[in-house]
Length: 124
Image 1 (cartoon, rainbow, N blue to C red):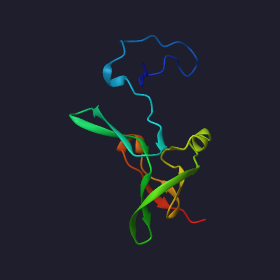
Image 2: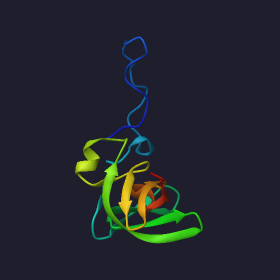
Image 3: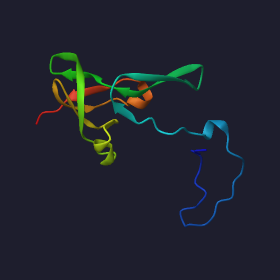
Image 4: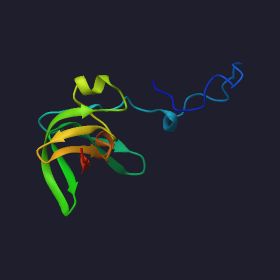
């Protein structure tokens, strides 16, 4: 299980002994690596009686142009600063540059957290 609590090591490298067991609110989930493809969403229970929608795959992006927002088709992932392997695997994350029908755009949303891709056109 993933744990998002404190590290078990101090800055000096010394061992930090646990004060309590892992609590449910300290556990995380594996990241949702949103791929380019037919739109597929998954709803998850989130904290506080809310629901989180994750995009497992999508081929549509809301692209902000100079004079409004346009729904564009995602063709390819051009660049991804988060991980160079994500470009080969066509994984969309925040900050990735994608090729769309409107031109190249930088992703401003987190598709694995919000369920959609929002992007802004990039001037070459």
